[in-house]
Length: 456
Image (cartoon, rainbow, N blue to C red; front, side):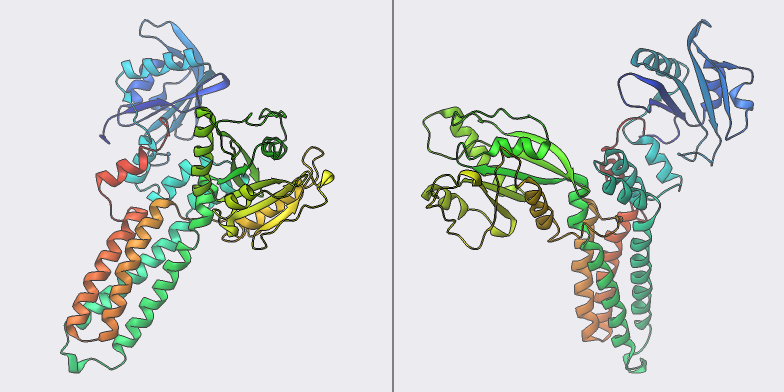
């Protein structure tokens, strides 16, 4: 991916809209803009932070579209380069024609995330902030959007930079001890270095503690609905969504494949999965649906297990429940309005609640129970804040291992131990530097920016 070419791409989503944007950035921007845009003033002579009204023209001078041309002069642009944005009508045909005109005039098609990559390389943002751009675009809830915005504004970067700078200072102090004869060092040198490493370790642990919330905000919590046929699984699925998404009939085995939909609960996106009823069956299709239901229950954050309370609890229900984790399972005792006189839920270590899903009774309590399960690792009532991603977590775990080793060496004291501690701290700093991009290589950048959409 060259950073000297002039790149262009459509920066608005596919489909029809009132306005569509084509973004161009690079050294040939003014040559291209003057060639394809006609207004009262030529773009190359316009001041940065202004816009021109005119038309985008084809090579033969015919009009492609009426448009605005927004002028951004380096370094005061998103990429840090000279940039223009052509705002035309938001139809796919006209936008593609404008983009094709830009490419014919000397630009090349931007690769995914290339505008943001240039912003990083030109010092407009670090890698953590760059990732926040993608998080903000893909946010599925207000809470996720607020967290991404704080990250974009540098809230998370400050924490990483403080950790990096602190470890850098400690590493320098440790290496300084190598220049002294051991007997000349004050007795408190290594204990003080140990205290500094302990403080850095605590900061690292605090950052790692935000991982669960980050995963939930970015990926959503997986909630799988399970139970025997006709327990009310599809009825619950529809009640949670507030729409008739799944087919509900009195025929056992109506649901055979996984049906998945999303909704937001207390600022956290949930992915709800309705599954096939658990039973012995000769139907190969239904068998596969049951196999998938059990497989999804293993990876789910929360399992909702429905039991029909209009009849005694079956041995099959008890057997299925024993395979689930009580800490992430809520048992829904459905059809409470027609409860069997001999019904009794026998397993005390599972949280259970009553419902009558046909009338909607118990749905609010169930949502509260789901939220409570999620809050086991995440405080949903706390203000939204920037949280680490999977990439950050992996690098922090690497740094943590090295930091623990360095702490052990410092505790031993002595020149040899100090040299080994310094080596471990260099490795920790290498990992931490890759989080924000203070240390980077092409493979790392490709991994980060390939996840972006084209045009951002």
